[in-house]
Image (tube, rainbow, N blue to C red; front, side, top):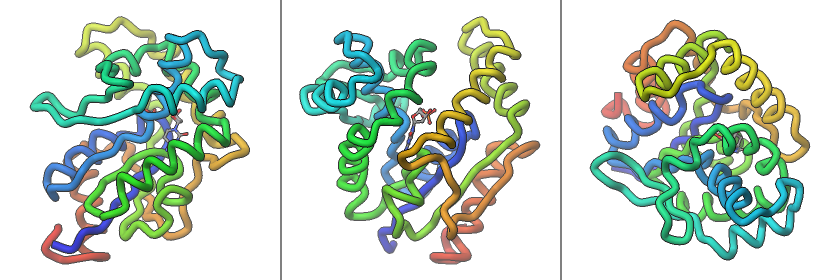
Length: 227
Ligand code: DC
C-alpha cells in the first residue's frame, strides 16, 4: 500500500486520539499523539521546577530528557528519558498547565521538528492542533474533528467514572472551554482548521461512526480499498 500520512486536528476531548489509534491499527500505520509530547514537557517542568513561562528553560528540558514512544499490548506508552510517563502526563496538574507550555514558539519549533521526523517516511496517523496547518501541511488526508462542549465534557466525565476518578461535570465543561480558548487564541500556530481539511462534527456520533466517516474520506481521496 502507498505510504501516506493522515493528520487529525481538533479541540480538547473531540475524540481525536481514540479514532486515530483505531485507524492506525486498521491500516498498519504508526500513531503519534503530539498532545502527549506537549504534556511531557509540562510534566518535566513540574518535576524539575522550571517555570511555565521560562521558554528557554523548557527548551532545555526537551534537549536533556528525550521524549519517545513505544508500543505495548496495552497501547502506546510515552517515555521521558526512559521514565514511563504515560499516566503521569494525564494528571489534572499537567492538563491545566499544558496550554501555557505549548504556547511558546521555541517549544513548538523543537517538537514540530521531532514530529516531522517521525512522519517523514509516511504511514503515520498524527493527531494534535496544528498537524494539518504546520506539522504536515502536505499530509495526504486531513481531518478536523469537532463536537459540542456539552458532549465533550460528558464523554470525559464517563471516561473518568470508568477509571474511578471522581469529577464534576460543570468543572470539566469549564476546563474544556478554557483550553479551547487558550489553544485557539495563542499567537503561534493556534488551533485552526486547514483549508483542505475535511470537517466532521462528531456530536451525537459513536466512535465506530466517526472511524467509518474518516475511512470514507481516505477511500475517496486515496484508495477505494481503504473504506
Ligand atoms: O490533545 P491533548 O489534550 O492531549 O493536548 C494537550 C495540549 O497540548 C493542548 O491543550 C494543546 C497542546 N497541543 C498543541 O498545542 N499542539 C498539538 N499539536 C497538540 C497539542
